[in-house]
Each structure stands twice: as C-alpha cells, then as structure tokens.
Length: 92
Image (cartoon, rainbow, N blue to C red; front, side, top):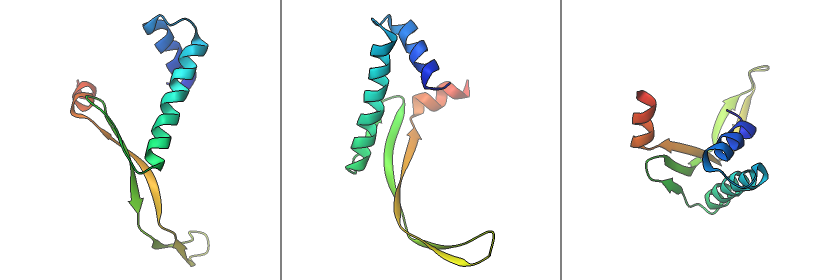
C-alpha cells in the first residue's frame, strides 16, 4: 500500500470531510514522528509499535568495486519495533 492508497482507505473508513484533509493528517503524523525522533525521543503507540532512533557506531567498510578500505561515520538510523498486538495480528 502506498501513501495515496493509505489516504483512500482512511478516507473511506473514517468518513472524513475530504481526502485532502486525510492527506494532511497523514503528513502531520509523519512530520510529528520525524521531529520526535530528531529530538532523541521515541513514539510509542500501544498495540501497534514504537518508532525510535538508534545510534550506529563508526566503522570501517570496503568499497565493493575497488576493495579499498573506507571509513563510515557514526550516525542515527530510524527503527520500528512492532508491538505484541501488531505481531499477533500479522501471524494469523
């Protein structure tokens, strides 16, 4: 499901005033999650899961084309940890 399909499904399910309004909801949610992770906090939705930012340590790697050793800087990466309710629903 892509973003347009998600908006269509939410519009149908909620009976919202317009698809544009639902699109703004989705955009606001995504923006909120990104802003929260940038601050170093996490977003936990009971029964669904938790969005969090993990630190990845600096490391060395290899350029696959040349075989040369390269240095990969430390960074933060977004992660999603599915909640129990979500996992159980997908298993069925």
